Length: 170
Image (tube, rainbow, N blue to C red; front, side, top):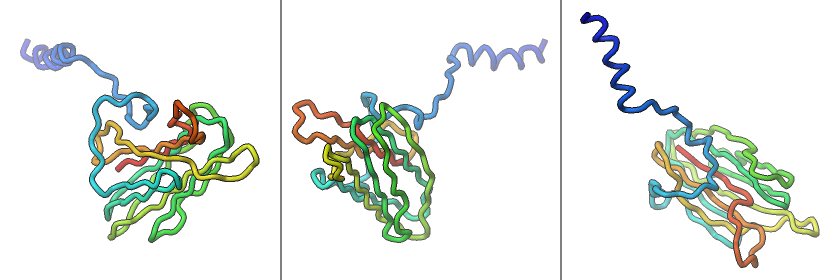
């Protein structure tokens, strides 16, 4: 009887608490509305909105991920360069709808790294132009998680901020 009680008690406890299927936060699209966020640490990211450029400071000895999502009618291009390691990512993509293109892990060495991010789009004439960008924090179980959103049409009265999204997390 004691053995049955020991085996059944954890099962009953899980039933009362509820059994939640764990879904990785990285699989959730960043375009969803954000209700609660962990603020991005001061000095972690700064943006130059009109130039399509951002600077990201990643602490020393940190494993981090960069993922790229696209939902745009125009071709998109990103370049991520490190002050230590050089160009980490240089990718372009044709127009796509709500696509996770890739997620790549990176890591810093014994010193912090400064990443320079450039988001661009191809205009109707085939020229690469800087996208307008902004940054926002995302819900996280990690120390830091944020997205750099871009929009292509700077004159759009209703800006669409998910044309190209670069998500950082560590």
